[in-house]
Figure 1 (cartoon, each protein chain N blue to C red):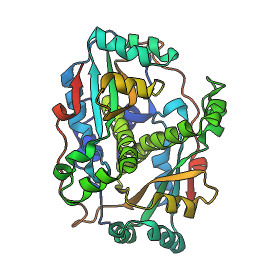
Figure 2: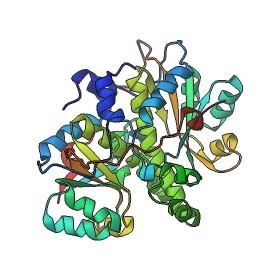
Figure 3: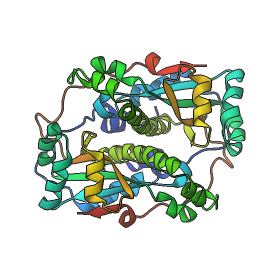
Length: 196
Length: 196
């Protein structure tokens, strides 16, 4: 590994999905620095479908909490900052600017709604992972959650219907205790990788 | 940023989707080290749906190439190693072992095929991103591609029908010239992030 052991620990080995945070706030500038790093992560046709809502007002946090699975509602309340990550299902509108190498890309996706939605969600998945890695790179702790009513949440925050919520991420700094569960089992190399 | 500038450059700022590789081979041990790092990346319910086929035989490379989009066929030929990344649509079978905290998780996904397939693909997207980051962490260059016949490719390599190909990644080391395109435009913070 070319990446130092410290950096490996920071991003993967010692990082955990976090449930307990200190009260220290997370600033917009910190999230700006994360974006300025992870924006370089690759996406198909450079489409970059991920959009981020930073939930700062009590009113927005209440609206968000209403759509979370019961077990996740209290987790929302403990995080200094919560982000809603969503796929822009109309990301293809930006392709003439983002991927000028293929002038037909926008029209191709315009005609193929199912393919466009699938691409938006999958590539927003890539970018969700880059975002989690970026938060850790900034010294922040991330608590990503998939347990929520995606349709209800999307409608609540994106009433135009052109975005689909893919993840909700609690963001802050690890509390000293009770900040994460014990490491769970990971699949082995031989369970994951096959040579053909 | 807590992550050093060098590490930021290695993983994001100076990293590019690569099309030109040196002839130096990529060993299974190198991929094993990547897996040993990125296996810790979080997935929903710790489900880890990503499976990896390392394409080493000429015969498998030909079968793969047949399903790639025309523009991607020659890229395959230039890489010392190619990986097919796929979502295991039956990943829920492992949940009793991977996510013992919720003994009902497996049965819930057994009853909800649409939700299971969507979860497999999205979380395989997260893991595809971790894998790309991990290759870079190991000093390898990655050329991820989304342009292929996903149904045909999945059927070719996973005839049981329980896997869906999500990405094909060329792997090697940057050639000194013509190894990547110029950096393309990235969306700004204000285009991506909204505070509510």
